[in-house]
Length: 228
Image (cartoon, rainbow, N blue to C red; front, side, top):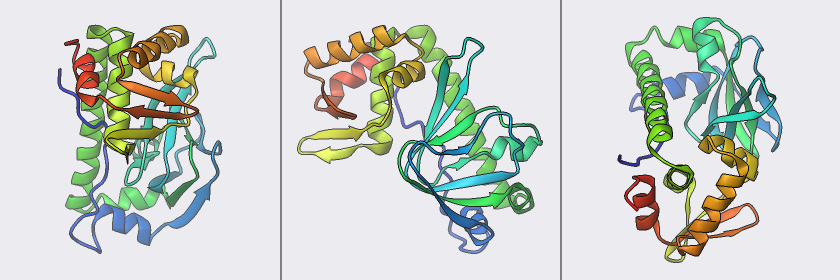
């Protein structure tokens, strides 16, 4: 099993006028969301799409038992809310700012019109294909790895996408609760806490308030690959 970034980012494109991001930004408006503010909620009509410019967005849904299920964390240059825009159905998940988030908001009709351009349509298809691959990879991960391996995988994904240098290590400012991290790993909170404790004991990570520093990414990668 090989670990790689989980983002499905849109390309900035070489054509400044017809690239999908350029079209959406030209026909949208800038909006800022505070941390904890919802971009949209499950069940709404998909009348808008959002291109993330800065910050991170938590995509989640609520299970029948009332537990929040974390589906993804999206960052800059990613499109959210496109599925409802494409199929006309209600939102299947909610999107919430976990930082201060800047986005470009567009009417769903802008995305649909843009897709008349083959290059723009190709970008959307590649993005959706990347998310499908990620869903398949996650099913394999859940079947093959224990909680320690899943937590290792999530941390690798986070440092690949959002990590910042911290001396010889990589730091992640991660405003997720332990419950949310556990949900994202498909594990209980107790098992996730034990996995983090194990990673600290091994010297792979150090943790602080909403901050994780990865000092041994090689061991973390072996754990994520189920090899350690």
